[in-house]
Length: 263
Image (cartoon, rainbow, N blue to C red; front, side, top):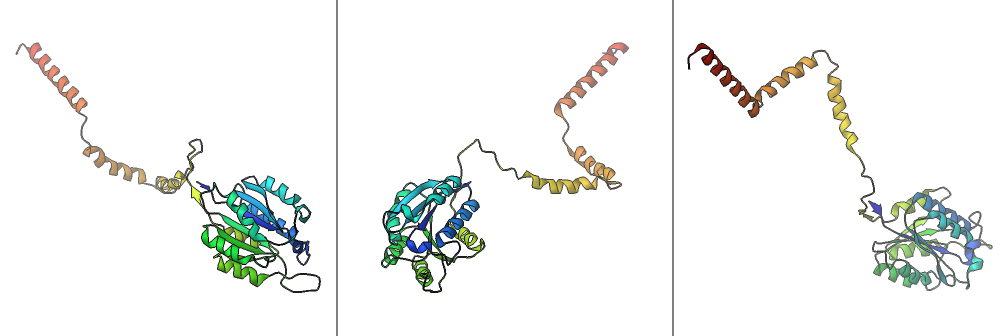
């Protein structure tokens, strides 16, 4: 079996992601979390889309996590042609990425907030599509003069309305493990005869070992012999052996009659 469920990662590349209330920055921490997710899902399909004032597909579906990490490290806000925060622009990219993927996918959104009119198209899209939305909020919700706070309540409301899940960022790997557990799985049977079968016959060794241990007890050999005698006696005689025995008996009788002259 192979898990055919795909994950499309939407990474916010807007200016607010450059804030350092989450060390080293919100964007750098998001990249670290994505790398942790790729390590947990080694060999699984993933795609990467970045957005700010426009959305761009960095990588279509691939199972090579090393390539994703290389492109991810090179992605910076400086490469984005337009400023802004419009995650809804990435919906068309998701459709193009998943147009040949028949299994329901999971969209992982890493951001610190939404645009003014982003919530409605996102909710409508995920209510009409079989794909799942997971939001990982990056940043601190505490308001300071130097930082734009994390729009935690807005993101939670979006996750609820889109029938998705909101995950709070943690310093350790709990947040990314929680996200990975919520990612949908879609296992299919592989039609590849070259793959080896999984051998589970070793479970039969346990009862075989228990029976084998009985042979070390005194008297068990004789006990098993007594039990096998009725089985051997109950077995039907071999027809060929019985016929050969009858033939030999007839030959011996005929020889005796000829030697004695009585025929």
